[in-house]
Image: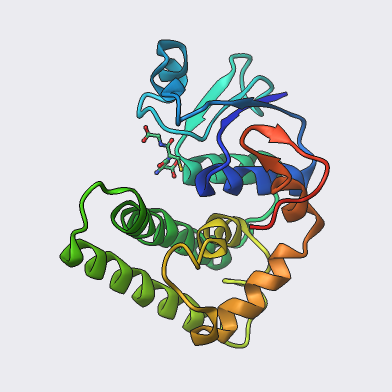
Length: 216
Ligand SMILES: N[C@@H](CCC(=O)N[C@@H](CS)C(=O)NCC(=O)O)C(=O)O
């Protein structure tokens, strides 16, 4: 059994997609970041950076002690290695997936996060910051669109790289991006949105699973 600490944000949905794809048994534990629950001392023992997502695997592949993992990219890699799914076993394929996973973790995620902050949450309008992060988001969308030309997935088969990237692209409107400018992304997004596991993952909304899927 895996304890999954989450909130319904892009970084939470990444891991939900993996769990739903594989059917791994999990217990979803909402951490309401709007109420500051991420600073709860018990949660900090699992996620010292006070952010969701985090997992505790009570039945790891090695040893008897539970394994705790925080950081969504590390969690996806941990789960891919645990199950042998959604990451290729050959060296070239594995590192192709990893470089795009790291691209999301170090580029798309942080830049899109700053984009959201300055366009939607900052209590001051700062045009320089807005322009910088929206432009950087556009640059990253262009990189992804180029990568997806002629492909169904970011690399080879559907992988943890696609799962990491998808939730940040799904909020493209909030990021000031128009998918008409990125036809390869648009096709890829629709394809992944229609996966049954993606639909199940997005049924989680504000910590409660609802009867009908919630659009990304
Ligand atoms: N690099 C981290 C980022 C996680 C992250 O930013 N989580 C946000 C929600 S999407 C959070 O928990 N924020 C609470 C806070 O910053 O206090 C990851 O990918 O797991």
